[in-house]
Length: 93
Image (cartoon, rainbow, N blue to C red; front, side, top):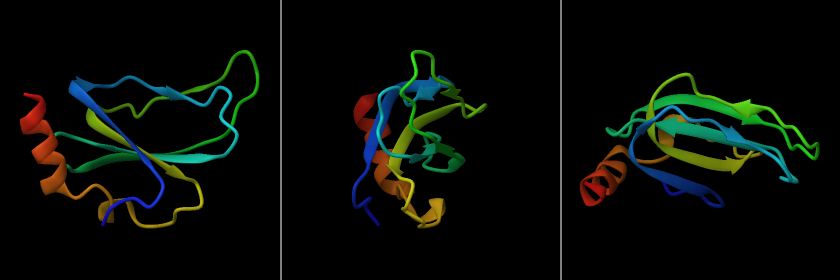
């Protein structure tokens, strides 16, 4: 199942970096996946219009991060099919 309105971040190698919501107007959900396409974490992120905003860390390593509207209630296991994510890893290598 493909995301209806999301943004997929693909990293060339594993990372544990965080995301922030500075100047973002709507709440988002972010789902982190490892190189095998396995979900490692799902977080809810709030909009931030301040000068300093919280950083949302998954506290795990990941290769892909999928941002979705917070209203998207599909289970994370149905997002980012493992085979499609693995194909992206092989292209990046």
